Every structure is written in C-alpha cells, then in structure tokens.
Image (cartoon, rainbow, N blue to C red; front, side, top):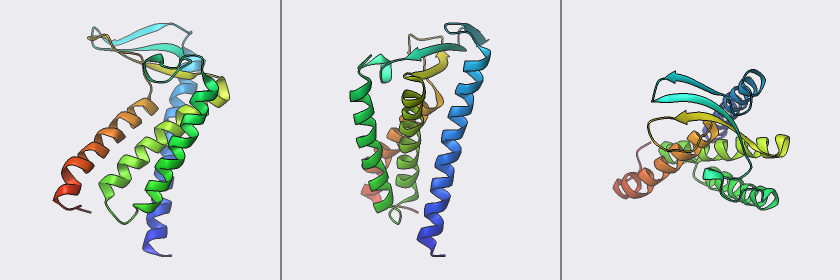
Length: 159
C-alpha cells in the first residue's frame, strides 16, 4: 500500500471517529435530557442545554433546510476535494480540512435525519449560542486553516 493511500485511510478513519463521537453525544442527549432542559456542570461557566437548531450557526438561515442542505453538500465537496489534493502538502492543512469536513458532515446527518441540528453545550459566562461537537470541529478547523494560510504556509510547510 502506498504512503499516500495509507495516509488517506488514516485520515478518513479519523473523520469517521469524529463524526461518531458527535453523533453518539447527540443520541445520549436526545435520549436522556428533555428538550430545553438545562444542566449546569460548572456554575456560571459551562452546562448542557438540549436545543434544536433549525438553521446554521447562531440559527442563521432558520427554516431554510433546502438552502442549508445545498450549501453543506457544496462545502463538504469543496473541502473533500482540497483535502484530496493537499494530502502531501501539510499535516496541519490536512487536519484543518478533516475537522471542517467532519463538522459539516455530522451536522448534515442531523439535518437529514431529524430535520434540525441537535445542540447541547452552553457557555454560561458569556451570551453565546448553544453548540455541539461538530460546531467545535468546524471552528477549530477554520482556526487551523487560518494559521496554516497566514503563518505556516508563508514560512514553508512543516510536515
């Protein structure tokens, strides 16, 4: 097996693992917490609040399922294409794209399966929307992509 093929299989396996973690958490929340219920873990810092999100981040495009589905398919396709093309460029770029792809696909699964995205994590010390693991993957992936684009790639990509 070629090095590129092995690397590709490892990255796709990690993607499946990340999606599985997010989906498992959503199943646990859905089965054990009532919609709208709040559970505080660290007072005034962090808790769980089970909500349905019919839109994208911050409930943008609320109720526009067809548009969100189209955007997600295009975004996931573009991310996957760049992932495939960048396999030999940089491990940091690959991780960023893998995280973004995993987040997009996992929330897409929710939209198709439930008609909404299950969100549960609540930061209590600031007014911040409730989110899920897939959202975290997307945010971390975008941050890594920006670091790669503006810092690492300009210096020469380390493996």
